[in-house]
Length: 256
Image 1 (tube, rainbow, N blue to C red):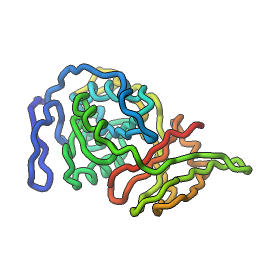
Image 2: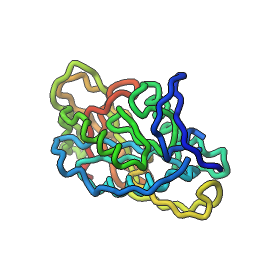
Image 3: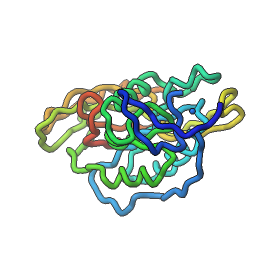
Image 4: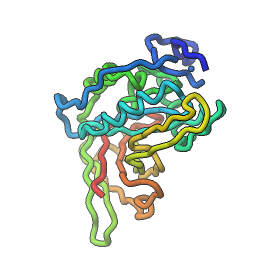
């Protein structure tokens, strides 16, 4: 498939600067210098980086590699969300979930900076987005992210059930979700734009479960044991996100 520089169109308005991205479904890849961490940022909540990617997108491997490096930084929570809309072009993504595609489309309707439906795309803390391989733009979004949200703590009660407490106060409501992640996935691609390549992914979403709603005051949520036994998952994280694909106000990787 031919490569080209493209601007994504959402709701009839255009935004520019997305060199190296592919619109749901194409663009040129570029090499970048990768910073190992954002150590100069201090906070209680990690910044959530959601990468929307696809095995059928030739521009995505550099972003997948960048996500793997960024995931080594404890100040960040990197989540990889493979999408489905490239599946019709010769290769069905083995990790894609329709829920990821719906979430990306919901983010696009918000009209935030970098909004759109394209790959690779990163969305930072449910807000601004950028081409997923452009480390400089990601760094800028991370620096501006609000990390002052509610505190998340996790404990185990006497019966062995894990309990999550969302502390603090606010004047808004937010959903509390548990996300099951696979810390590492390696896939050999048989056809399509990446045919013949072996691709590597970090923190791939395997399942998501809604635990309830946080109403802006200290509240506790229980995690059913079966939610922590998802096939293929070896990590679990809590996200607190405002309704309608709004900002992610808090996050925590559980110690399991």
